[in-house]
Length: 308
Ligand SMILES: C[S@@+](CC[C@H](N)C(=O)[O-])C[C@H]1O[C@@H](n2cnc3c(N)ncnc32)[C@H](O)[C@@H]1O
Image (cartoon, rainbow, N blue to C red; front, side):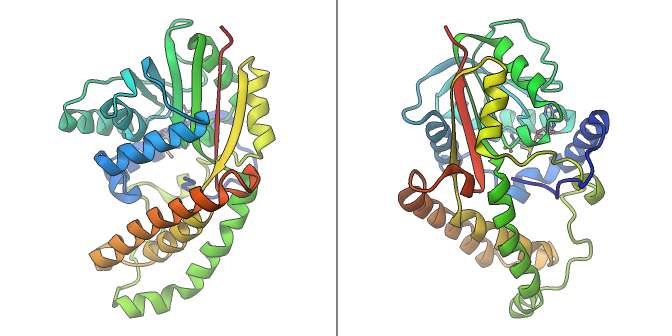
């Protein structure tokens, strides 16, 4: 889930952290609607399915779990509801995202501890979690070596880590094809739907698009991603890839939608986009994942453990 283009020049780490905090604070209120985040049966199935893929098989039950970059709670709240984790501590650099997470938790009747902090400096004791996980967060973190050392430190010996939704470098490049195609097609698409051009294209909720251009700092090859974890002393590290056709389909639709006034995009289109995405996801799972190398997929997932 890339929210903007990667900056051409590396920026100082503090600038990136500050941009992430402000950008996501501003995006928080509209984040779930923008990304179609669901806390029902579909959301639970998606999240547990991603964790199963990252772990390479069945999902056991975990006790105390820590989420890094938890956002509005997509992973933590769905894993709690599915009974995969008993206790969740959700962290994020953006206090605004955590406020939305707490509001979502109240609606669902769930209890979650939230702590605003940077993934590179976790305010938790050594060996205090059975599982450390995250979704679409590693590519925002300036110093991944420090973040993985923190992940290892807070994991109990034998504990598991798993991250999904990280952009692969090749997958990201391939995704430019549907994005460019959709940009060319957009005027025809809007005319067909009788949708007005967006007054403020590229706006992410109330978030500043200029900040959106600098919040993403990495796209990975599978080897690079694995190296960050291994160098931090983590074991049994595996990187897998998921979603190719689903992402092409998703980026085409999101690029088209971003060019129109949101109120003019008909509900029937949204349903088509959502169910089409699920269909292509199933095709990816059955036909492509496990057959093609991880690098060609749009999303990378990494998992492993701290040695016992
Ligand atoms: C793309 S969002 C993903 C949110 C959520 N995990 C999800 O899948 O919906 C990335 C999240 O990472 C957080 N983030 C960015 N940099 C971070 C850092 N250095 N430490 C902790 N969280 C960070 C952002 O504030 C944001 O909530």
